[in-house]
Length: 117
Image (cartoon, rainbow, N blue to C red):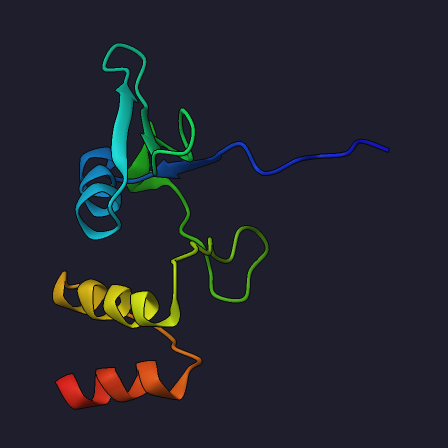
């Protein structure tokens, strides 16, 4: 049996590499660890390793199929924050950044959304 220590990184093939980079950098606080303009790819970190998220441009994004709700594959990535107060702050920051929250399971987070509407 292999004894894994943690997840090294997640690779995301995206329709718009620059927009995705801005989202992970500006909305979520990732830093660009390295970018490879010749071969493509942006390696982003939260500071606890070389990279956590890799973003790469799909070569034919306009023709690629889109994920379907309820389909197979990656459903979400969860990020940890330091406290419940930090979670509320992060939630508000995402809303302020124009991020669409599709679902919130905590009544306090849902109340923030309703209050802002």
